[in-house]
Length: 175
Figure 1 (cartoon, rainbow, N blue to C red):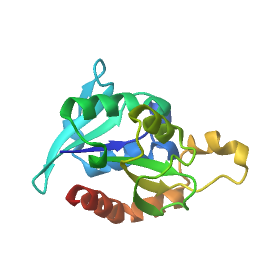
Figure 2 (cartoon, rainbow, N blue to C red):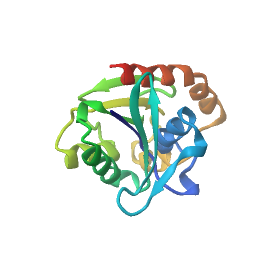
Figure 3 (tube, rainbow, N blue to C red):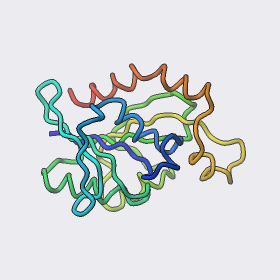
């Protein structure tokens, strides 16, 4: 069994922001009509699927980014999913817009959602699908930058990479 987690922030105001690229990716990959919501035990939206004979749980934690660990750890513990079978999809300001990287055992690189997951799970031994959103020109503007929507040309660039993102998710599932 695999767990694929898209990081983001809940709420309409964050829907199309750079920080929500994990939610956007998950929503593009799975059937939008079959999400289950759990506000009590797991605080997330999830969907179970079978791909290539492998059972997959797709998760969108419905807590703010720095509390993503809660839903992830609850589901991983409930289904006894090992950390190496977890993929976290997230925005990355250290990569140019549209650059995609699949990595295992990587630092948080200052990403608060990842930092929190690593700290609470006590391991870095899980997969990351890093999706580049670029870096703002002024370092102090990072928080504001990731909470803004993509420019049209940036969105087009990411949309053009949908096949590569899907390919990387399938590579993780097959691994």
